[in-house]
Image 1 (cartoon, rainbow, N blue to C red):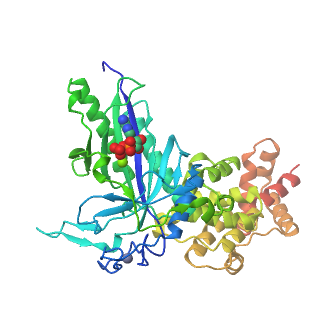
Image 2: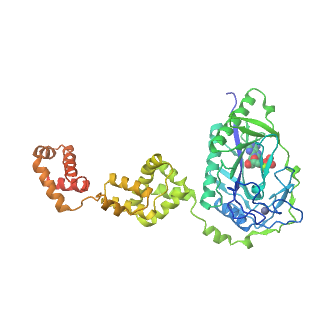
Image 3: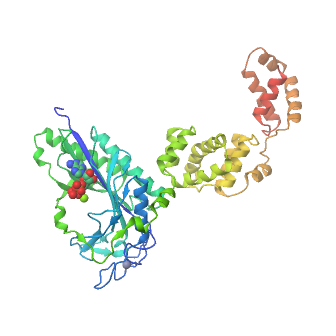
Length: 475
Ligand code: ADP
Ligand code: MG
Ligand code: ZN
């Protein structure tokens, strides 16, 4: 390739907030409501004279996100009207924020954050019923947060696509850990838009294209890579002028981006402060210091902690990416009270849960008390690892005390030294050749004797204790 191209990307991510009610009215915020136009009222349907009231919880959620990202929480903030005409926007404008967003600045993964603001979601248009369209207003007025990143340059198309997805995934985790949004991309609760450009001069930004319709991390990664490759190809063919500022969609079936519309400027929206809503004095209305102190532990901090306790990198990611597991693990940790036992617990989670999920489909996590009891029994060698695996499966299927199961099923290992010594002596006497081999330096011979003890005790002996006893007797 003749030239070096510097791809640049900036992300705009929308996330529906998890609140009881909508952004400016008392309608239920229920993304799972299947009956259309049930959660609506004069405010979100824009009937004349209806007045909006700000949902404080939604503002609080955005502040939490801002604090978590290390952004600055504005003292003064306000809502603006973003005017445009479309059937999914009953008022003829969307209430959003323009000059005074709640959050400015911050950082996550590779990206600096420009702002995080609050707005309302639009209705859902359904064009799939024939030659007419239907509109469901349940979603109209649901609190919607928008995060905008600064442009960031990567080395090549692939790194750009991966870097963007890494950011989006990390942001989703932050939303989960803060418990402010379900942020499911497939359900449209989190929507990623990617602005991409390429340039031959690292100090200058090229013309950007905005890519939409990214309904999964996978399509986001493919679409970004595709779009940058497309731009580079045009440049290489001397058709750089064909790269124009526009909105492009991602066609999942064709695995291609396509032109949707040439971009309108922000002037078209005629933003102005919404006169129906009060201004926000956030530093007065919220105790920001207290909110900051009360933030839950965030994914990156948790990662660091798990890494420090010696857990393998890929295992750390498995746990971090599953909020239910990591919350549950925190409770298990409280009970186990030791790093050593925690490692055993993680080992069960990572190796055995995977197998159980394969076997039974989705499993529920066992009661943390029962699970911890099992880990402790295993760490004290009261049960074998085979028995531990079996009992784990039982308590995943139905909560019961592992000790009770082990007793009933005769799975407790004998740690009665006196009894084991007698058996060991008998085994040695019956196998003089094997004993002599071991004494003569054949280490393997010992395991054969341990095996015989296990057989003799029908597996109830604690194998490592049996081994210790044999070593002592054969000195
Ligand atoms: P617009 O007014 O078109 O929405 P903004 O300046 O608000 O543009 O930026 C929107 C997003 O596009 C931001 O995430 C920003 O980082 C990104 N962006 C801006 N310029 C470029 C560029 N030349 N290349 C890639 N991304 C860009
Ligand atoms: Mg924009
Ligand atoms: Zn309403």
